[in-house]
Image (cartoon, rainbow, N blue to C red):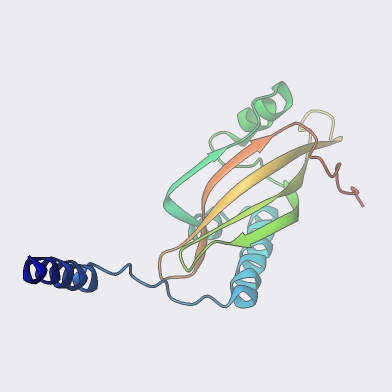
Length: 163
C-alpha cells in the first residue's frame, strides 16, 4: 500500500512539474511607452490641424473603432466634415488625465479634448468638448489608437482650461 501511495505522490509531482507554465510577458519600459503615446497624441493634434488624413490613418490600427459623442453639436460637426473625422481647419487639443501601460501590447488613456473649427456661414469659432477613454495597441510597429469612446459629459476633474 505504501508503494502505491508513493507512486501516486510521485506521479502527481511529475505532472505538476510538467504542467504548462504561463508565458512570461516581455518587460515594458513604461516611461518609453508613455513617451511614444505622448508623441502619438501630438502627431494626432498636428494631423488634425493640417487636415492630413493619411497621417491620421497611420496613427490608428486598421480595426480602429472611434465613437464620438452623439449630441446635436457633434453631429453638426460630423455633417460638416463630410465623412472625414473633422471639418477643414479644425484643431484639437487633447489633455490626458491618466495614461496606463497594461503590458507590451495594450495601454489606455483617459482625458478630455477640445475641438475648435469655424462655422462656414458666420466664421464664428465653434468649440466642442469631450471626455474620452482610449485603448492603444502596440502590434510591434509602435503604439496606435485602437478604440475610442467619447462623451460630451464633463469629466470628474472638470474641463481643462481653453487657453
